[in-house]
Length: 494
Image (cartoon, rainbow, N blue to C red; front, side, top):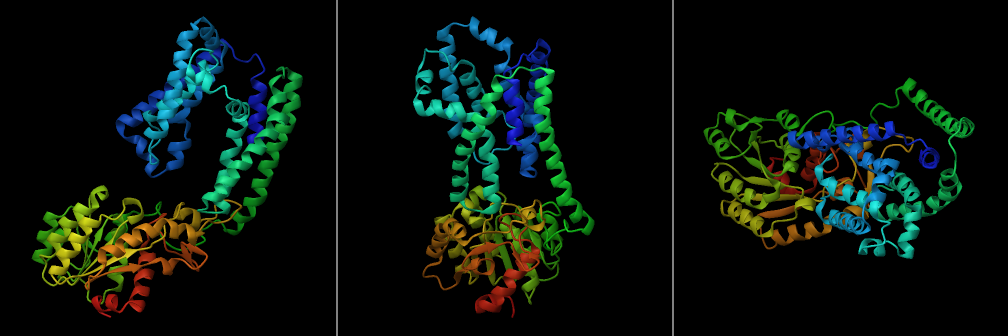
């Protein structure tokens, strides 16, 4: 695909195809895409990236304006406008563009939802640099005139085409390995140099004639036919034998939601026949009980990870009376855990509390967590903090289904998991240090061996997404904890 793009775009740049109609067409499509992006932001629809990142990130509807600006900068109409401007003005615009590109490094968060007006900062900055960066006046031009940056600029388009496919292949072949992504990205420099001299540069001088069109349509058409044949030869047998069906059994994000999974094992506390539990639901943001006519014996609290632990506790407890009380805002999880704990201790019969959260992302709120432990211990409640559940840099659907000829992706190197979890595991250990009624339950050993961590065991998928267990995984975890930890077995009635 990269070679095809080089052939088509490289040839087009050396022709006279940029007519007045093309200019207005590109301008119109750019404006339409901008309108879609603004409406999406105002209506909050840009959050589609939260559930379908590919649509938000790659979809042309809300991001086509970025490509449109690049096309406009290359058209003769804009170049004529460029020649009419004073060098000093163009130099200042180039400087402004350099500032925009630099600021974008600090202003764009890693979890930005697409499309977003925030992208105007790097896009407009790059547009100003491309359009006016060749003006002698100004520090931007002097900075970009260095030998290394000139070399990168010469091959930048080829590097752009090659680097991302290689990084994607590195992610598929070596999941979780940052080193391999870096090495594959470096390899794109060599491929870029080769394709630049063999494809891009020769095509810049091509004249667009019927003969040249026929000349290049043959290899381009041949590549398209080969790609189509490869797809048919690969997928046709699999469709016939049904082998693109799920490779592992279990829930994934597209099939259900957290609340659906929880409601299969409990109901809202406000429906409880136990007065104390029903009253508790009035003081908590959310509350679910496994038994409407049984007093609470065990509770699980935390962020969205507590939702996924709930099915495992309900299935493992021989006593019953399991209650789920999740926080409403994980960014202040420490304060909310304190508030929830102060309400839970008012329940008669509460003997144990399990705490589960995305510690790797939020960090461990040491001071607040210690106060939570103090509150529960004063009321003779045993506390178990879950930790060590692997965080995979891909979704469960990548493991459940065979999406490409490289097969499914279900594992990460155990070193990747250890590096990401060691800091918060140490913080949790410090929080429970010297306490007799609190303990940290490590889950790593149930999903990792000495080489890798996996989403599956046999044919069973144990993850809901990249870092949440599904109900099958939660049951698997607690079945093993019951066998390996006598305290867990005792509080759950084994």
